[in-house]
Structures are given as C-alpha cells and as structure tokens.
Length: 502
Image 1 (cartoon, rainbow, N blue to C red):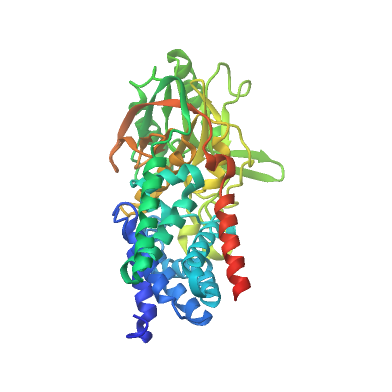
Image 2: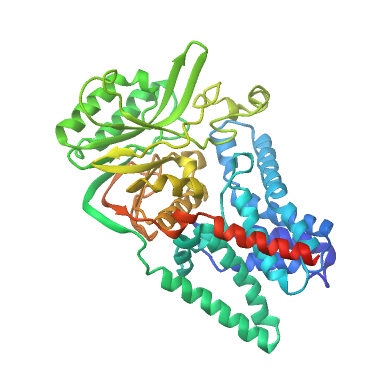
C-alpha cells in the first residue's frame, strides 16, 4: 500500500480504524480485531515519526468516530443541542481521542521500530496506549481490543492478565499472521505454530476454574422500567416512574435480591424517605433485600454535595435511626456528571445544562467503599461507566461475592453504545471469576456467569423484569492478585530494549 499509494496511506489508516469497530458488539466480527491492527502495522512500516503521527491520528480518528459516534445521540437527541453543534462536538471528541490515545505512540513506534523487534514493539506500545487511557484525564477505557474476544477461546487469558493481555495477544497475532502470509518458509512455520499456541493456550485456560462457588444460590429479580430518557427527569414523571417500578416489583417480594437500576427513583434520598421506609417494610416482611439507584445530597452550610448513589435497604426502624447502606459513585463521567468549564459549556450547548446534572456537579465517593450487603452476600457495586475500569473493578471484587452494576444506557438510544457497554461488563466477570448482575433502565439487563457467558438477558426497550440466580464465589484470579503489572512490565522492557537499540 505504501509503495503504490503513498499519498493515500492516511486514508487507508482511517478506513482500517473505522472497520475495527465492527469487531465489537453488536457486530461481533472479531477477526477484524486482528486484521485492523495488522493494517496499521503495515502502514507504519518504514514511516518516520511525523508520518507515524499522521497515520496514527488518521487510524484513531476513524476508530473513535465509528466506535463512539453514539455520543451524538446523547448530545443531540436527548441533550437538545442543535444538530450542527452536536456533529461538531462529536467530531472534536473523536479527534481528541485520536490525538491523545493513538497518535503519540504511533509516532514513537515509527521512530523506534527496527528489525526483529518491530512486532513486539508495536504490540507493547498498543497495550501501553490502552493502559494510558484507563487513567489519563480521568480515563476513557472503552473498546480495548481484547473485548472483541469475549466469545472466543482468547477470553481464557483474561483471568490471568486482564483484558490488556487479551489485547496484546490479539495484536501480536496480527503481526504473526503477516509472517504466515509473506515470510520465509521458516517464518511461516514459526508464525503458524505461535498462532496455534496462542489459541490452544486460551482454550485450555478457559476451562480453568480460578474461583469456586460457596453456599446456596440466591434468587434475583432485575427490574427494567424502560422510562424514556427525554421524560425521565420531568417533575410530572416522578410519580408515574415510581409506580412503574412498584408494579414490576409487586410479585417479586420474597425473592432474595430485588434490583432497581441507576437513578430509578428520580428523587434525592432525603425527598424519598417516606417511599424508602415503605419499601424497607415490604422487604423486611418478605425477607427480601432491596437495592435501588438514587441521587444523594449532603446539605452543608458551605453548599450542597451531590452523589450518584446506590442504596441497599434492609433492617428495621426509621431512616434517621438506621440509615441504609450506600455506595457513592467514584468514577464520574466527564462532561456528564461533572462538567469542566461548566459556565462556558452550558452557554454553548444545552446538553450541559440538563435537569439531571446538578449545576455544582456530582462529587466522587470514597475510593475504597465496602461491598453492599444483600441476602447475606457482599456486592461489589459499580454505577454505569465505572464497570469499564478494569483495575478498579478487580480491587473492589477482592472483598466481594458478586459483581453488581446498575446503569441507564437510555442516553445512547438504539445505537451500538449499550451493546459495547454490556460486552465490557461481561469481561469484568471473566477477569474476577464472579457472577455479574446488570440492571438497567432500557437494557441491556442481564445475569452473567463467571466465565462471561450470558445466562439470562432482557430485551432492550421493553418494560420487563429478569429473574435468575447467582452464587457467591470465593477465591482470586491471577489478575485480581497482580493486575496489569506483568503486562506493563513486559511492554516497558520491550520499549526500553528498542530505545537502546535505536
């Protein structure tokens, strides 16, 4: 490609990045998760640092524009921002992600790449780039390459080294494929054997049980209210919304755990105490544990402090005497739950002045909060976006029996965003060897087994409930013990070796 069409190489890079999105849910064309990085690898051959930067940016722009174009739905359809402004913000968002999370490391690769280290260096810098986007500017750990392999044998590596290890093996497999297709006879044989070893290793590891069930199964009911996003926060919808969830729950009292999704009750906790005390009475009378998402506010003399929270309601007595166990969200969504340069942005785009976002912005909860108690289990709880942070989930899961995530993906409509979100959540179950409960407003609500398989799943955009069972899991996976450290140390060693050779 570079030899025949050098002036169009960046266009090829943009196309390769855009096609990478098809590897992820809901499309599931996982071979593209190998072929797309291979295309970028080819396009960076013999490139200098400036060319590497340009082609990396083009690849990243294509990838992010196709991969997260669902932000347009949030900004325009539900944020009431004019279409032209919404398109501009979406393009700027994709360009920013491409610049921060792709262009820098492709330029570094082009400068360092020499000889036999090129495949390993490309893989090392790719996963380093994925790791950087898990924390830089609060992080955007979305669409790691490894997520595309949740339904393949490669998922067996996730409990060992997390999704980053799966990403590394997928990207490295692409470079091996190049050897198989165009290398010498010896290189072809070696590449084929390495590919076979990667696949066989994943298949074998997928049958290893790192954690073990303990105790009896608990019955669970997840309520999916399907409240339209453009109506969810209207004052006149508060009563009808609560009634919808109460109707869904009417016949579920007596099951072990009942879950309402993120902000299911469109009131602050102090405003909903009469309702919550009544729900507590029903839970105590039936022997159920009741969990719901709900915003919370501390009223202080210096100003209010807002939290996006989840409550586990059990016990007896009034709330002022025996308050519920609560989890306050730690990883807030930038420009959603917390708005930098708020006054400027709210003047430009109505999206940043929605009723559901307090003008002061939500505040982070404490970093190490205990699991929520429910039916004798400890639930590691994650609100919406938090489930995409692998390291945070593994640390919280260490003291928990089951993973719980509640969300409201109604912001993304019928786009591929909710499917990507669900795919990411499934990988957390595999990494930690825990059952996962996922309760949402519009879907995808589901119960996921410790191997990532979907046991039960509710249809999207339907008012329904999902019944199932979960079991406490004890033990830890290697990833829970070591995290990303082994993968990052290997990537650092390869990069330093390439630097020395350069």
